[in-house]
Length: 206
Image (tube, rainbow, N blue to C red; front, side, top):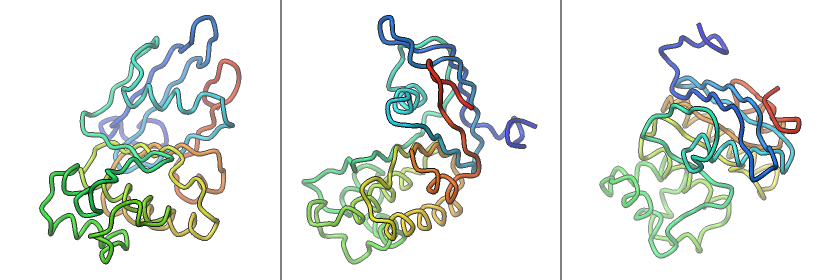
């Protein structure tokens, strides 16, 4: 059995980071992390501790580090600011990125409560609706690994709770290894199966 009681064969992500620095400034120290299929792991830590740096390394966006990362090719990301195609409708945002038919894309919108918004453009949607569209688009590609970087930022508490409940429901329907980055302990408690805290200087997992 592996970390968190998951069988080794079920692991989708394996991180063995030795160090990461910028010039003479060492930002991250040793980090060892495994995430299994169907497991949601939350990464907590204060602003500036190195959460985004670690996320970029795990996602393959930053290759300048010492250590190794094993990840599947099929991954998707949900950012703090929804990175949507503003010149495309909600339906087209899913069809183009995920390569789905209009009927399948419509089903994806229905799953996040945006079935009646398919013809609207992102700037015609509220922030909460844009976040739901970004989540629907990410899951529509059927990823093996999902990264969510503070996906509930700037939402009021009621909408945060609604988004957490929606995300939990969708992840239960589509088992995927998920890394959820946040600074809010309550969000992590509600959504994650396991919580890790990045702390120290250079930062490591506690």
